[in-house]
Length: 317
Image 1 (cartoon, helix red, strand yellow):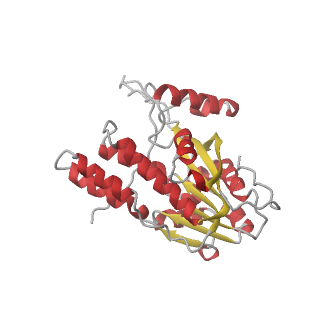
Image 2 (cartoon, one colour):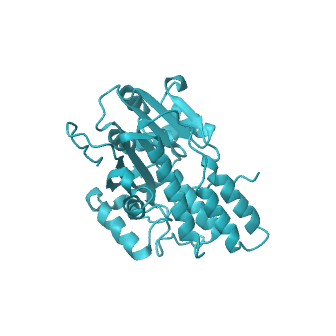
Image 3 (cartoon, helix red, strand yellow):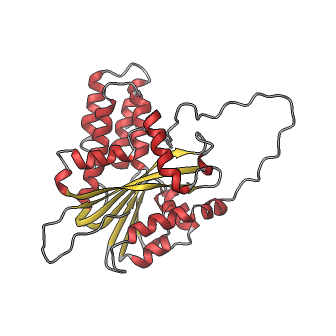
């Protein structure tokens, strides 16, 4: 079995790639001291508070169950607040190391929550690994990619027992889509269909494990300061406008722009009837120390049978 390890991903707009510095012989300016893991973790506090507050909205303390899935998912959350608020918390990472690192960073006892490792990310890494193995010796044929698309439509279910009230997906979708484009080729005519299959399967799985009336939130990267050095200097109130302009001008991140995800949820015949509403979250900054990321998110509510006595839930925003 060939397993492809998904790399980190980021959108690189034309004109924003850092230029290589020519060696002029002049003495180099002193480099900033490298931040410790704890210092880097502390810089991301505002991001974790924002995402955690979204999860806790609309649920009385001790009454709901939440599930968080994705690579390094614990880094996106204030786990102490989450454990205090929810009756049950489940973290599903793609590596045990990622789980352990984020629990240690927040001094969380692993026995206080349920943890699982989905190293193959429900099977998509095996699908991509096989395509990568084939492409190493020959050009991918149409039927090779079509087999990959078919496999992406029938991935293994996530290891979640019962139904949950809210699901947060952190960056795993973006990594899968970016890896697919790298292997299949950005110009391959079947890439849009491949991406659609992965997005659709991901959304279906979230809906499968959600209770009626439950919420799903997908969070992904829009941009990084490595490829847009001006990113940290953009005022928060202008970030949404700047990101919209960049995406409109240069295209968006590989398959994970919030408009692509929103349009899938609103218009795909396979799932749109299962949704009560879809809401795009305003972009925000995730500061990791050496690199800052502009993040985007989409929230949605799973439809529930109408009950005149129950008021309609407000969207997460």
